[in-house]
Amino acid sequence: MKVRFESLALLGVLLVSMAGFWASSGAAAQTPEAAARGPAPTSGAPGPSQTADAGTTLSGRLFMQRGQYALAIQALRPGIQSTPDDPELHALMGISQARMTFFADAVVSLDFAPGSSAYESEGVNTHADSLRVVGQSARAAELHGAGLLASELSKQDEMLLWVDLVDDHLYAGDLEAAHAAAVQCLTLRPRSGGAHAVMADVALASGDLESTGFHLWMAAEDGQQILRAMWVEWRLALVLGDLATARAVADEALLFRRRHPRVQAMQAETLRQEGDPESAMGVLDRPDNKLKEHPEILAARISTLQDLGRTVEATSLAAWAGSVYPSVPAVQAAAAAVRED
Image (cartoon, rainbow, N blue to C red; front, side, top):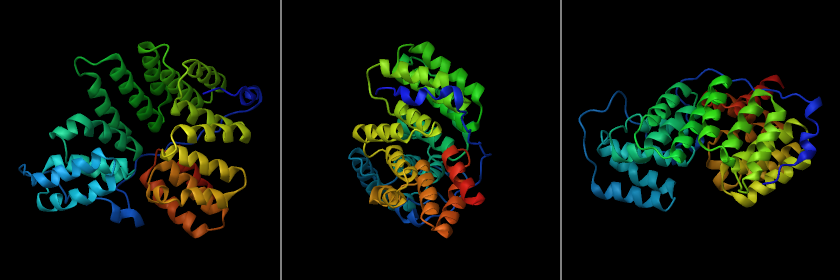
């Protein structure tokens, strides 16, 4: 990734408009996509452990290994209905729901999963990431922090946990703690482009555009394509009003990770800001994107609906997404714009 200095030349005359961070909210409301999710556990803590039929667990795992998470959810549903206290099934369900970007549902499922092998191997980090996105950053940081206490962590694994903590603190609006965690990333891997991309993200959130540009340049020096660096550079270009650079970065990201929800959101939002909301909605209405509840996809959809004059839909989606993702700046900014219009 090459840092585009035409944007950075404007640093001395422009300021960053920071999006606010909202307090955490309660449970998520249902959406039209709810049929694709798995069922939430009944209520209360799990009872005595029960074991699901081995075929159900195997089917779910096979679909997950193939990346077919919607099918995994369908395969796991009967097992959860018949053995609702099996933590392994809840772990597999929660991981699949998170991969489908049903983060609020994933939190509910994974709350019933601790103690299972799937939870310990993959679910705990998925649980923490989902908690962060739905506004429960304190619980997310607690889980990620516990991971740092594990013995025999490699430098890479330790850095990834610090990256997670950076995100936990960013979503909580604690920029000082986010910066401290980002410094830990650089201390562990001073030449890592990923670590510099994280530092750039924190700097942009803090309004320090000069440091943002410096760390993006350092990330580019690593010689690897890094989606987070692209995400930060794209946002910086929008802050600076440089749509040409935003378009170049969005297209570069599309070549790198075409199916990633954040990349799809970048494409849609760039089209919208270029004055083409119809094409932006075309991106958002693709089957893979229409089903997703990824916060940046939802933010782009809210703004695009508003630009198209579909105010009732925009208002309804803004109310729902704003309550489910109270700490995601893009969602809150899009929802606030609808309320102010």
